[in-house]
Amino acid sequence: MKFLDIAVAVLIGASAITGILVWSPLQGDAASAEFAARTRLRDSLLEIVQGRGIPWLIQTPTAEVCAALADMSNSSVSYSAILGSYSCPASPPADSVSETIILRLLPMAVTLEAWSDVQA
View 1: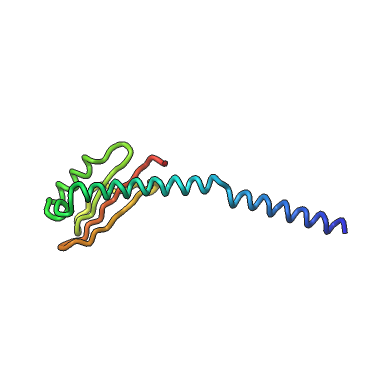
View 2: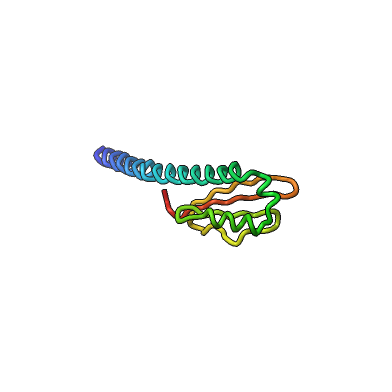
């Protein structure tokens, strides 16, 4: 009987420790910070589309669009685009937080990317 009591106590303790590790608030905080960073990046992309306008994306030569996006980039956020089959030279590093919007416009699809190396 004493062995059964010890086994149950060990199982309860192991379950409690597992629960603490699985439901750690640090994981939730990291996910919230990444979500907030992605939201800021998406908002900045939408500001570019709204501020410059869709005709700018379609009618401006691709090299000029890429240059303008590079000029808009700063130490906290970088921008790039894929305009039809042409891709701007910059692309997000693998470990960065990034966001992409795709606009299916005639005569081409436009993909705008924003990324940040700074973790929120």
